[in-house]
Amino acid sequence: MNEYARGDILLVKGAHSFLLAAPVREDFALCIETAGEECVQGVHTGDVVVVSAPEAGPVQPALMLLELVRTYHLPLVVLPKNHPGSKRIPYVVSVAPEILTSCAIVRGTHPEQHLVCSSDELAGLVIRITGDKAGISPVPAAVTLGWL
Amino acid sequence: MCTVGGPTDIEIPPDRVKGKDYKCRECGERFKGIGKRPMCPSCQSEDVAEI
Image (cartoon, rainbow over all chains, first blue to last red; front, side, top):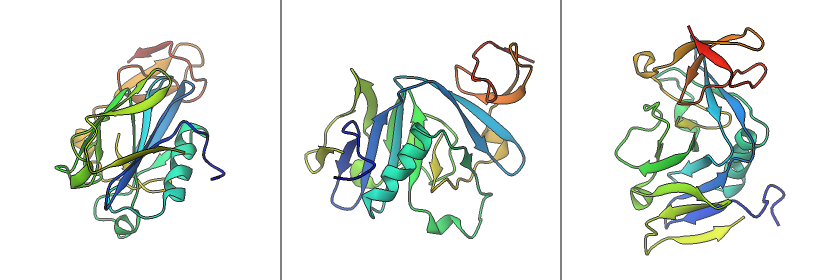
Protein backbone atom coordinates (compact mmCIF):
# COMPACT_ATOMS: atom_id res chain seq x y z
CA MET A 1 0.00 0.00 0.00
CA ASN A 2 1.35 3.34 -0.96
CA GLU A 3 1.88 5.57 2.05
CA TYR A 4 0.40 8.53 0.21
CA ALA A 5 -2.67 6.67 -0.97
CA ARG A 6 -5.96 7.50 0.76
CA GLY A 7 -8.40 5.68 -1.45
CA ASP A 8 -9.88 8.76 -3.06
CA ILE A 9 -7.27 9.39 -5.74
CA LEU A 10 -8.29 8.38 -9.24
CA LEU A 11 -5.51 6.95 -11.41
CA VAL A 12 -6.17 7.21 -15.13
CA LYS A 13 -3.55 5.18 -16.88
CA GLY A 14 -2.86 5.08 -20.58
CA ALA A 15 -0.20 3.15 -22.46
CA HIS A 16 2.38 5.92 -22.24
CA SER A 17 1.11 8.40 -19.68
CA PHE A 18 -1.11 8.78 -16.65
CA LEU A 19 -2.88 11.32 -14.53
CA LEU A 20 -4.14 11.49 -10.97
CA ALA A 21 -7.27 13.32 -9.86
CA ALA A 22 -8.58 13.87 -6.36
CA PRO A 23 -11.09 16.09 -4.58
CA VAL A 24 -10.07 19.13 -2.57
CA ARG A 25 -11.24 18.56 1.01
CA GLU A 26 -10.96 22.06 2.44
CA ASP A 27 -10.90 25.66 1.34
CA PHE A 28 -7.48 27.25 1.09
CA ALA A 29 -5.55 29.95 -0.69
CA LEU A 30 -3.05 28.52 -3.16
CA CYS A 31 -0.11 30.85 -3.68
CA ILE A 32 1.59 30.85 -7.05
CA GLU A 33 4.99 32.49 -6.95
CA THR A 34 6.46 33.92 -10.12
CA ALA A 35 9.71 35.80 -10.52
CA GLY A 36 7.97 39.13 -10.25
CA GLU A 37 4.91 38.66 -8.10
CA GLU A 38 2.64 36.41 -6.10
CA CYS A 39 -0.76 35.35 -7.38
CA VAL A 40 -3.32 33.77 -5.07
CA GLN A 41 -5.95 31.32 -6.22
CA GLY A 42 -8.92 30.54 -4.02
CA VAL A 43 -9.31 26.76 -3.88
CA HIS A 44 -12.52 25.30 -2.51
CA THR A 45 -13.96 22.04 -1.27
CA GLY A 46 -15.20 20.10 -4.25
CA ASP A 47 -12.58 21.45 -6.64
CA VAL A 48 -10.40 18.85 -8.28
CA VAL A 49 -6.62 18.58 -8.15
CA VAL A 50 -5.07 16.94 -11.18
CA VAL A 51 -1.48 15.84 -11.62
CA SER A 52 -0.66 14.86 -15.17
CA ALA A 53 2.38 12.88 -16.25
CA PRO A 54 2.38 13.25 -20.03
CA GLU A 55 5.42 11.01 -20.40
CA ALA A 56 4.45 8.59 -17.62
CA GLY A 57 7.15 7.82 -15.02
CA PRO A 58 6.65 6.65 -11.46
CA VAL A 59 3.33 7.31 -9.76
CA GLN A 60 4.77 8.01 -6.31
CA PRO A 61 6.14 11.50 -7.10
CA ALA A 62 2.80 12.42 -8.65
CA LEU A 63 1.04 11.33 -5.47
CA MET A 64 3.44 13.40 -3.41
CA LEU A 65 2.90 16.42 -5.59
CA LEU A 66 -0.86 16.05 -5.39
CA GLU A 67 -0.74 15.96 -1.60
CA LEU A 68 1.75 18.81 -1.38
CA VAL A 69 -0.92 20.94 -3.01
CA ARG A 70 -4.12 19.38 -1.68
CA THR A 71 -3.16 18.64 1.91
CA TYR A 72 -0.17 20.82 2.69
CA HIS A 73 -1.10 23.81 0.53
CA LEU A 74 2.48 24.41 -0.54
CA PRO A 75 2.97 27.37 -2.85
CA LEU A 76 3.66 26.65 -6.49
CA VAL A 77 6.94 28.08 -7.69
CA VAL A 78 7.09 29.25 -11.27
CA LEU A 79 10.24 29.25 -13.33
CA PRO A 80 10.75 31.83 -16.02
CA LYS A 81 10.41 30.92 -19.66
CA ASN A 82 13.34 28.94 -21.05
CA HIS A 83 14.67 28.13 -17.62
CA PRO A 84 17.15 25.24 -17.98
CA GLY A 85 15.43 23.23 -15.28
CA SER A 86 12.11 23.10 -17.08
CA LYS A 87 12.93 20.02 -19.07
CA ARG A 88 13.69 18.01 -15.94
CA ILE A 89 10.29 18.38 -14.35
CA PRO A 90 7.81 15.88 -15.75
CA TYR A 91 4.65 16.47 -13.72
CA VAL A 92 1.97 19.09 -14.26
CA VAL A 93 -0.54 20.29 -11.67
CA SER A 94 -3.90 21.96 -12.10
CA VAL A 95 -6.58 22.91 -9.57
CA ALA A 96 -10.07 24.07 -10.57
CA PRO A 97 -13.75 23.17 -10.24
CA GLU A 98 -13.49 21.35 -13.58
CA ILE A 99 -10.44 20.56 -15.68
CA LEU A 100 -10.05 19.69 -19.34
CA THR A 101 -7.02 17.74 -20.49
CA SER A 102 -5.39 18.90 -23.67
CA CYS A 103 -2.38 17.92 -25.74
CA ALA A 104 -2.81 20.95 -27.98
CA ILE A 105 -1.20 23.36 -25.55
CA VAL A 106 2.45 23.90 -24.77
CA ARG A 107 3.27 22.62 -21.34
CA GLY A 108 3.53 25.35 -18.77
CA THR A 109 2.51 28.15 -21.07
CA HIS A 110 -1.15 28.50 -20.20
CA PRO A 111 -2.34 30.08 -16.99
CA GLU A 112 -5.96 29.15 -17.64
CA GLN A 113 -7.10 27.15 -14.64
CA HIS A 114 -9.43 24.78 -16.41
CA LEU A 115 -6.74 23.22 -18.61
CA VAL A 116 -4.00 20.75 -17.87
CA CYS A 117 -1.37 19.46 -20.26
CA SER A 118 -1.69 15.82 -21.13
CA SER A 119 -0.47 13.27 -23.58
CA ASP A 120 -2.32 12.70 -26.83
CA GLU A 121 -3.92 9.52 -25.51
CA LEU A 122 -5.44 11.28 -22.47
CA ALA A 123 -6.49 14.49 -24.20
CA GLY A 124 -10.09 15.67 -24.30
CA LEU A 125 -11.13 14.40 -20.89
CA VAL A 126 -13.26 16.45 -18.54
CA ILE A 127 -12.37 15.85 -14.93
CA ARG A 128 -14.67 16.89 -12.11
CA ILE A 129 -15.83 15.80 -8.70
CA THR A 130 -19.06 13.85 -8.55
CA GLY A 131 -20.24 13.07 -5.07
CA ASP A 132 -16.97 12.88 -3.18
CA LYS A 133 -14.79 11.31 -5.85
CA ALA A 134 -13.14 12.38 -9.06
CA GLY A 135 -14.51 11.19 -12.36
CA ILE A 136 -13.65 11.60 -16.02
CA SER A 137 -15.76 11.87 -19.12
CA PRO A 138 -15.53 10.29 -21.60
CA VAL A 139 -13.62 7.20 -20.58
CA PRO A 140 -11.35 6.21 -23.47
CA ALA A 141 -11.37 2.50 -24.27
CA ALA A 142 -7.58 2.25 -24.04
CA VAL A 143 -7.22 3.57 -20.50
CA THR A 144 -7.54 1.82 -17.19
CA LEU A 145 -8.99 3.40 -14.07
CA GLY A 146 -7.96 2.65 -10.55
CA TRP A 147 -8.04 4.09 -7.05
CA LEU A 148 -5.09 4.86 -4.85
CA MET B 1 -3.47 26.93 -13.29
CA CYS B 2 -1.25 24.41 -14.95
CA THR B 3 2.09 24.08 -13.29
CA VAL B 4 4.87 21.61 -13.60
CA GLY B 5 7.04 19.81 -11.14
CA GLY B 6 7.58 19.62 -7.47
CA PRO B 7 6.84 22.17 -6.33
CA THR B 8 6.59 23.44 -9.87
CA ASP B 9 7.87 24.94 -13.02
CA ILE B 10 5.75 26.89 -15.39
CA GLU B 11 6.18 29.44 -18.11
CA ILE B 12 3.56 32.09 -17.61
CA PRO B 13 3.73 35.10 -19.90
CA PRO B 14 3.07 37.97 -17.47
CA ASP B 15 0.52 39.53 -19.79
CA ARG B 16 -1.61 36.38 -19.64
CA VAL B 17 -2.00 36.27 -15.88
CA LYS B 18 -5.14 38.29 -15.33
CA GLY B 19 -4.83 38.71 -11.62
CA LYS B 20 -6.70 41.46 -9.84
CA ASP B 21 -5.56 43.37 -6.81
CA TYR B 22 -7.49 42.69 -3.61
CA LYS B 23 -7.44 43.78 0.00
CA CYS B 24 -8.65 41.52 2.78
CA ARG B 25 -11.35 43.19 4.89
CA GLU B 26 -10.43 41.08 7.89
CA CYS B 27 -6.65 41.34 8.13
CA GLY B 28 -5.79 44.06 5.64
CA GLU B 29 -3.52 41.87 3.51
CA ARG B 30 -3.11 43.07 -0.06
CA PHE B 31 -2.64 40.45 -2.75
CA LYS B 32 -3.13 39.65 -6.40
CA GLY B 33 -5.93 37.14 -6.80
CA ILE B 34 -6.89 34.88 -9.68
CA GLY B 35 -10.03 32.87 -10.17
CA LYS B 36 -13.66 33.54 -9.39
CA ARG B 37 -13.48 33.25 -5.60
CA PRO B 38 -10.35 34.99 -4.32
CA MET B 39 -9.14 34.16 -0.86
CA CYS B 40 -6.74 35.96 1.45
CA PRO B 41 -3.39 34.13 1.61
CA SER B 42 -2.79 35.29 5.18
CA CYS B 43 -6.05 34.59 7.01
CA GLN B 44 -7.90 32.50 4.37
CA SER B 45 -10.86 34.86 4.46
CA GLU B 46 -13.02 35.33 1.39
CA ASP B 47 -14.16 38.70 2.68
CA VAL B 48 -11.97 40.62 0.26
CA ALA B 49 -12.46 43.71 -1.84
CA GLU B 50 -11.05 44.48 -5.25
CA ILE B 51 -8.87 47.59 -5.20
